[in-house]
Length: 144
Picture 1 (cartoon, rainbow, N blue to C red):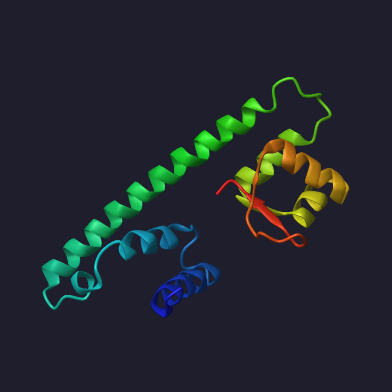
Picture 2 (picture 1 turned 30 degrees about the vertical axis):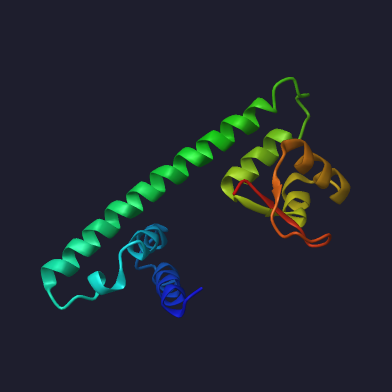
């Protein structure tokens, strides 16, 4: 990650921690602004800079809507796997966990759902989450 990108995300995190802003919208705006060429964002002409910022905000909105649609589709696909399950199944709780935190570790699943590590791996497999780390230990799964 480039230092400028890290700086923007760090600044957004500091503002959130200080209570200046409460939502994660700054990271979304950062994504949108990254789609605009640097020379337009830092242009000497004020109007060019303002247009670049406006286009960045529009890009952020489009990215957010695409992400919303992707998560909604993932939720629909996971809900289909819940049909015919026992009422005591932990799978619905795992779906809620994954929707709240799109990247989950085995420890998170064990702690949140109150299951054994082996059961956590089994229900993650049943749900069809994608393994993200490529490792055998300390793995994480996601809907990304």
